[in-house]
Image (cartoon, rainbow, N blue to C red; front, side, top):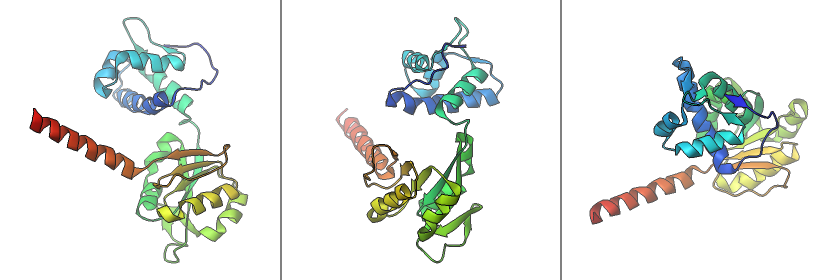
Length: 220
């Protein structure tokens, strides 16, 4: 497998969304001591056209070997490096309810370069506690805490009515990236990175597809 250039490429967002799927699969193969994998094999497992896989990887200047495919270990390394999973990024959780605490306890995120180092909340019963080994502080302490630690990423898991306020606090404290789990589309300066992950939106997609399948089955 060859990587032609070391220059970081700006990829289409659909490609960015597929790359972690490829990485998870080839990581599994690597753990099974598989040495090579073809785009056809990846296609069968992930239900993505092999031509699309080859195109996605070509954006990273990754090429497989003719009749052999991609070297699994090298592919893992290249994908991890490009996606930033080889680097460590500290983050805080704002809102330590059910979802926030679940993320704080999910140490598997560390395999993808994310290290949650603190939680912030307004509830006196959780302030001063630890969740998954991560301390929880009062939200009023965020600015002072941030001055000492300089974390870039805030994960927002607050109630929807508090989403913009939480985002504003994070940005005012100097954080430059927000992972927003609320169904509210927060507003932020252009230089702040925002990733929206709405569980409810995905539920709507599931329900819609279930309904469509049910209707097609009845009409078929």
